Length: 125
Image 1 (tube, rainbow, N blue to C red):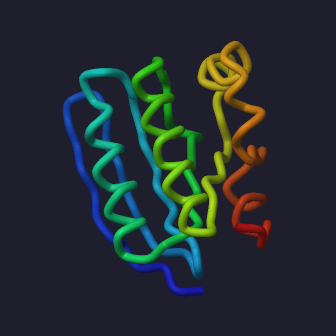
Image 2 (image 1 turned 90 degrees about the vertical axis):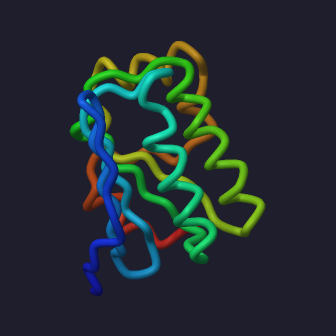
């Protein structure tokens, strides 16, 4: 598999790393995803879609917090990826982040995996 780093963005509270993993773009946000940091995730997700990645895997294992603004960023990326014939896969969510998805029902509209490895092994869009 090709493991090239595509890019990264950082603020004091959120670091976002992007890399290519076969047909997927793996996006790893680390820290707090909220209304102050949402653009740091939105922009790399949109860049991945512009570059032709239809399958986005969000490695949530280092995400410590996600509010409704962060959730909306992920929902927006999901709509754009699905429109392109792909999808967004969430992997390794910490309990505090998973709870936000459960409360809002968003976990029902994403493909959720226990780990990054499981998400990458799933060959669906």
